[in-house]
Image 1 (cartoon, rainbow, N blue to C red):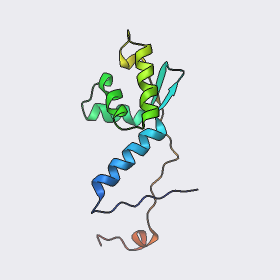
Image 2 (image 1 turned 90 degrees about the vertical axis):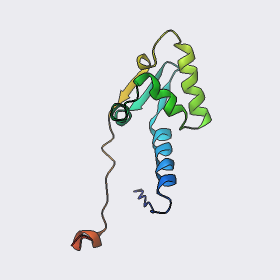
Image 3 (image 1 turned 180 degrees about the horizontal axis):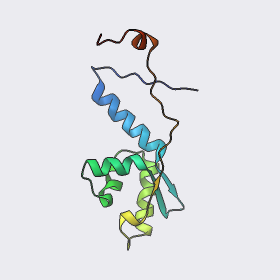
Image 4 (image 1 turned 30 degrees about the vertical axis):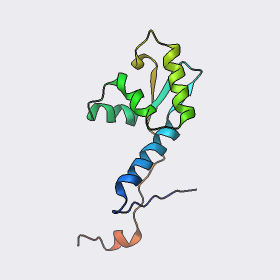
Amino acid sequence: MLQLKVYSASNLREELNAAKKEFLQTNVVVKKSSKVFLPKLVERFSREASIRIDDILGWIMENVDKKLRDSIQKCLDHKSNKKSSQIIEWRSYSSRFRYMFSKDLIDKPWWV
């Protein structure tokens, strides 16, 4: 089923924060306490925001639930002699995500 999110101006910050957390919760995967699989989009974000790869896991851990946070921490503890960047694997972007535009907007754009 297609899910459409609509954001309001009055709660934009809270809604985008919730969307960020939902995205990370859905797309970050820990396998066998040895690898953390992150979406390629996070790598791009870390470069654009000048966040070191070694610090990105800390940022992610602040934005996911306790169960996933504990799994990431366990992975870090297991590999304490390695840099965070050595336990990260990048997952390619899912092309299933699409923008949808209202037919009204297409027929008569607001800027016309």
